[in-house]
Structures are given as C-alpha cells and as structure tokens.
Length: 623
Image (cartoon, rainbow, N blue to C red; front, side):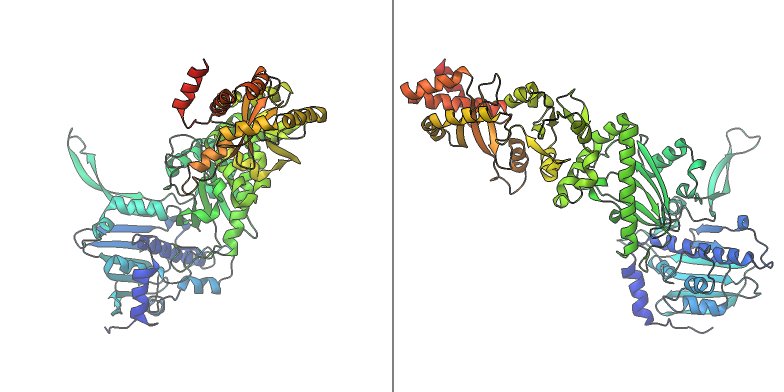
C-alpha cells in the first residue's frame, strides 16, 4: 500500500472545498446521496442494453447505516461501482466528474444524471475525520478501498465486497465547542435531512430504525427490533399528471410542506418545455403568514434540480408583488455552481421567472373572473402587494397589474374592479373619482362626498396607506384620469358656475387675504360651489393629499413633507354672508371664525388640530 497525493493543487483545493464552497455542513449528505443515485442510474441505463445486469429497477436502493460506537455513518448503493482506475481518476483528482464523462459518452436524452462537477464527494470531509470508499464495479471480481483523512493524501487497496456497488464509510468528527457533530449520528436527524434535500431521489433511501414491539403472548412486555424504513417519497407530486392528483392530495402536500393549517385558495400546476423547461407547483395561500409584514419575511420558491433541493427560498423566481406565492420549481437544465447551493444568474433562470410571473398573473385573473368570493378573500390578504407592484419601479408593471386591483366604492360599499367601474361610468363623466380616509365611514363624512354622489358619480374609497400612491402612479385607466375629490382640480361646475365662483372670489379677495393671515398652515382661502350642505372643507393643492401626508409623516426622514391646504367655504351657505358682515364690522371676530372653521375642516377631513385648547376656547367665546 502506498500513500498517494491528491492532484490539482491538492491541499489548497481541498481546503477550499471543505471551508468555502459549501455554506452548510449538512449539505454533505445531499451530495453523497446524489452521487449514489447517479451510480444507480448508470447501472440501470446499462441494464437496458446489457443482459448481464440482473437487477431490475425495483431492486435498486440506497442504504444508510449508523454505527454510534465507532462514530460511523455509511451510505451504500448497489449501483455500477468503480474499478481501481476509476477510484483513482474520480476521487484522486478533485473536480473530475465521472457523471459528466458518462453523459458525454452517452447521448440518450433520457439519461438524467445529477452530478456534473465531481466535487460533491469531498463535502464529506466537512464532517468526517476519515473517509473510506469500498467499491466493486459491475462485472468485475475485484473490489477496492479508497481511504483518506484529508489533504494529506489517500490510499487505494484491494478488499472484499460481495455485490457490485459502493459503500462510503464516514468516521464523523468529534464534537467541538462550535459544532455538534453527534447530530449526524442520530437517525431522526439523518431522516430529516433526507426529507429536506433528497426526498425526491427516484430510488428508495432506506435506513434501519430501532423500535419496540409487543412480545407475542406476554401482555405488557416489549422487545426492541430493527425495522428498515424508506425515508424518501421518490416520485414528486409535481411530476405527476394533473389527472392523477386529487384536490385533497394537492392540499395535503401544501399543508405538509409549507406548514399551513388552512387549505390554499388556488393551486397552479404547470409544466413547460422549450426555452424555459421546468415543472412548477405553486399555491395562493388563503391568508398571510404571521411575519408577512415584518422585515424577517423572505419571499421565494423552493428550487429543485432533478429532484434535489437546491434552494429553500429562491427569491429570484418571484417579483416582489407576487411575494405571497408559495411553491416548488424543478428544472433540469439550470446552470448551477460547483456546490449546487447557488445559482448562476443566467438567462435560464430569468426565463423561468418571466414565465412564472405570467402564469401567476393569468391564474389570478381566472380566479377574479370565475370565483369572486375567493378572489376577494385573496385580495383582503395580499391586495397591498399588487398595489405596491404598481407603485414600485416607477410604474413599470402597472399595465400588468392594474386589472387585478379592487376597491370598495360608494356604489354599494362592495369591491369593484377598475374595469367594472369604467363600464358603469356615466357617458359624460370625465374622470375616475376617489376619496381617501382611514375607514369608509370616515370617507363618507367628507364634505365633498355629498356633492359628488348627488351628481351620480361613483367614488372609489381608498382606505389603505398604499392606495393613493398606486393610483397616482397609474395616473389613468382607459384614458380616464384618477381624480381625488378633495383635490383643488376636482371641479364639477359648469362654465357658467365657474365664472360665478371666480367673480365672487375676486370681489372678496381682501377678506380672504385677511383670513389667510390669521391661519398659518394654509395656502389660500376661497369660496366654492363643490359643497352641498356642509359650510366648509379642506382641499389640497399639488400632488400630496391629506392621507399621503399622514403616510409620509410616519416615515423616517419625511417629517417635512406636507400637503398644501386650501380652506374652501360654501358660497351658498349662510356662513358666507356672516363672514362678509364680520369683515366689515368685526375683524377680530372674523379672525376667530377663520380659526374655528379651519379646525372644523381639519376634523371633518380626519386631520388632527394643533391646539385643542384654543379650539375649545373659541367655541366657548363665540357661544
């Protein structure tokens, strides 16, 4: 026996493998299981044309054995095995892949080999102080043992093995202050790792468990026996035909994998081939997770490559506005890096993400059109994500998302889509009108609402903080602009009426200038004919409304963002003549009236008043 050295800058490269390429030590089991699956694939492929292979597909298996006394974990397969030369070439040369060579030599499109870089095996050194590989190639009489304790090198010696295949014997490291290596000798932990990373390997992965069973004929007595269990599911549900899967199976899979107690609102099962080849099983949840609106929430889909888990949360597959989607994507032709842990940000991944986005949008539209009750439940939970999608990226996605939006309205206080609103607009209606407030009841108290409803115009009620930002970003729907009824440009008067208001304001411009001086927080005071019975209201000039001001004021570094308010007085209300008289007879009382009316308008508009004591005193004085 002669100690051999690794080739290819052995020590540096092996150190890199152990310490840098893999993020989590537990990945070693995924890599070794994938290699075992590849070895079985090669023998199965050989059996299709070679009668010397007597094993059928049902005979193949991967066996895990734990020996706590010797601190050993053994991964065995009955695949094609390796000769001494193959052990030398595949394990003595880091980053040389036998699987890649096998695929190059066999062009059959049905071959589905997982390994491609030849480095996964060396992840075993992250948890092992010694690695022994006993292998016997199919059709050979000799077996060989490859053994190494790390970068010092390795040995290859003849040994005994009855059947073809490979046994990988890992002597697990001793515990340290930082790492508990004992976990890789616990059956429950091994089982959990198999279910997490290798649940859909196509061959059964078996392991012995010790269990207690009643002793026959002796009531109350139990004996310990060993039971061989299959740990993996093998056939992924998403690779089955839709016709083979019941609704209950879809829902059970969702609850088990994503730990939800409620059934999903919608299942999206898709398979594509061509430029973007993948299987996808996506779910629209029925409610938001507890951390959905927290900074800890992570979007993303589980990403598999040939049934092996690559990423538990691949965020690149979902746009932010569809971050609520849960599910799985399995693609056979992703460009992976050598550790299979990270994706190359390549064209293929972008293609998959693009087709998924289109598919999700189509399915949400179908749900809106065919199951309104479910869609409204969905929108209650996740509608703000769609609105944020319109507002973000400077409105880049507004055309894709605008028809998925819904708002309560003055029609019947039920949800209405923008399409439905547009279909029932009056023919002469020039704009789509909305009003913002904390609740529908508060919105309906706004003085401007009464006049607009009297004109027969429907008003969208915006009660979420993002609503108005989204509509201002969208700007129009079917060429109709969105207009806040509390904005100064919301004018419903005829030209004749506008001229009358303009003349009245010009005649009383000195009075309004006096009142404005008495009020520090407004840009103007004027008469209006927008109101029906209310004496006064606030309107805003510019792009920032009262509700937008509230949102922006709550954000860091936005304290100076304020709406520009105009105090508007109903020119047809008795208060108008009262003000004119006070301007001629008692300007001090007019100043008090101006402050009183302004605070009244703020309260009606859902705004706070800066000096409640002054407001209370003004009321008492005027009484």
